[in-house]
Length: 79
Image (cartoon, rainbow, N blue to C red; front, side, top):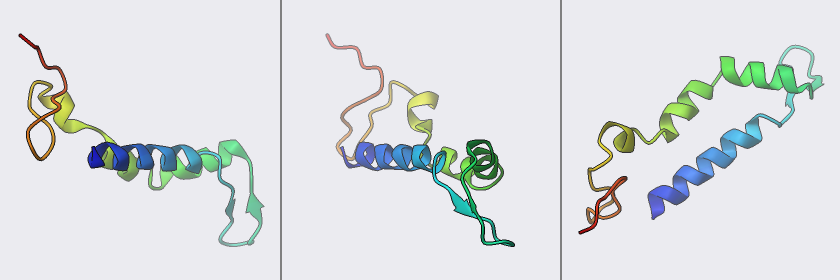
């Protein structure tokens, strides 16, 4: 459960970065152009943010149990 909360918070953060203005380092001017904001993010920390939130455990082995107690697998078949 805590992993899901952390993942959701990172996804929300990533979404907010797409719309948050930034200051140009050289001029100090506030940049609000969405295309420039997104380009800066993709060239900057997007890959790190994406890789830190991507659920590799569910993609590589969807039947593996998830969580500290082994419950909550990705695709589980109940009998």
